[in-house]
Length: 320
Image (cartoon, rainbow, N blue to C red):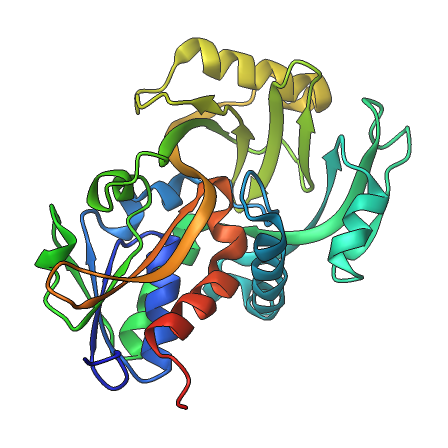
């Protein structure tokens, strides 16, 4: 059975996980085709605020390893922000303990320290410079990197993984994996973002109130993304006006200049949450290899490169 080495691989799913996995495979010598239902600009990944942080993802130890490897790569991509859409931006992560972060980040986070009461009066927090990825710029750049490596992208709707015409299939279908892999543990967590004209905010901020409500501010070129929501098992992609009003109100409570900022658009996405990421080799009914790679929740961008390298190792196992 062909393991994929110097052979065809079909990656099903064109979000950030699928594209990154395809790039790694193509740059390691595989002939890679991505089958995606939607162009990259209309995937769930395109909606993300895209701050690097291991958010709602497990298993924790693996996720942190994947995240730190991805951090290393994003740091290099941030040297060319105009091309890649990746920047290193300072900001505050509220309700976070410095000692706990230092325990797993091991000196990897630039400028990491406790916040002062003047910086963040809502409670304990940490300040750091983290990758902030402009997804409308980054995803097309990632697509072009795949094409330069010899990969191809086809817009196809897949109803069964067995439809993929290759010796090895990589299942990066996110929320659709619940159906395609018969995995009932995959469920949606709905996120909503309000995009406004930036009134001058140049640092990011993530804050979580005692009742669990979030306020997130992510400055991107020409706009400011305000979040957010995390609604379990809600599948509606229609923006909720009341939720949007509440998002703006919570963000304005932290940064008053946001109040009255002109709204440019509303974005809604469904995070593909699972108890833990599924990353394993299996067999299709006809005996071909399938590598399942899904369940990244709200941290797909954060772990994409580290996770993709591990997935590629399952497609292209080391020679004995």
